[in-house]
Length: 460
Image (cartoon, rainbow, N blue to C red):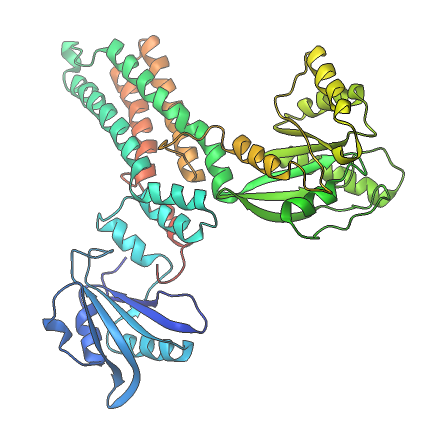
């Protein structure tokens, strides 16, 4: 990365009320001053806003407001200028080209955030949280991104890493006195420390499944036999006529997907073909796709018609669902057409068979009865492992690094138990430290940085 002043449009492409053009670098203020007609920007204080015009020689390009952020009190810790102009793409491009002609260069994707990282303003996990914040599409994903931006996750990692560094230093010291057969690092205490670190790594590793769900949405399959009312349920959940509803079995031949926000979590509902044995070639493909979606889902609703399903049949179906690793809710539909007495045998036979399922709910998709309760149960199921103020891992790179760090620490314990020499133990500790350091960016390389920041939008 060079130190030249960079410039880019910070607001989205397209027509809007205003556009914001951002510059960062040691010459950001001087370059802007060359094209700004108003107060002398080079003499103005940090965190001030100034009215004027951007001019090309004597030609006025636009009426603007210019905000100054002097180093080090800016996002990048460099001098930063933000020019607010009218939201015409043509005007914004004219101003950017004028700034380039006067000494700036076009910013690369994520280069402003990259400079913030390189200059020590944020660590790597916080930089990645910036991208997550921009991409957040629910209250929950926004909250996790904000927590990570504030350094909650990276602070946890830094504490663990510091404790391990202290022991690594003692073992390195032993190597300097190799001929004297001295031991500075108490192996028993080292194992205790590793156990303590792994006890903190384990919940972080396990949180990734939940974090990934919150970040990317909860894949929720609606499955069941033909005519159980799956399409009607999808329409009821969305409160709109999204799926075709028919009394004819096998109407849904392909999957239908829609997104619904429940209490800040995005649920991706997937209406599937009814599960049954059929000779219809197209319907067979639909059933196969249903089974594929069931295996890929985070949560699913298994819908059955209380009027045409026997309790014994339901028990058999639940057993089959459990073989697929069922994580969802058993829902009896069309309760409006049945007596409440009809529900008792379902509870009883499931309990007696030893296959009791905690999430059993009766609804009517047609009348919307218990649909709000179904949404609440889905939310509870998806977030059951989320504790207030707990650290949740949402990034696949972090997850992989945590797994490898945990594996390296296991090797340290095995090495100590096998009475390996200090240099071999030190090597495994270094591996653990390296993987932990990759999360915050204390240990990194250009390839990792290039891969991370290439996914950012230009201007951020």
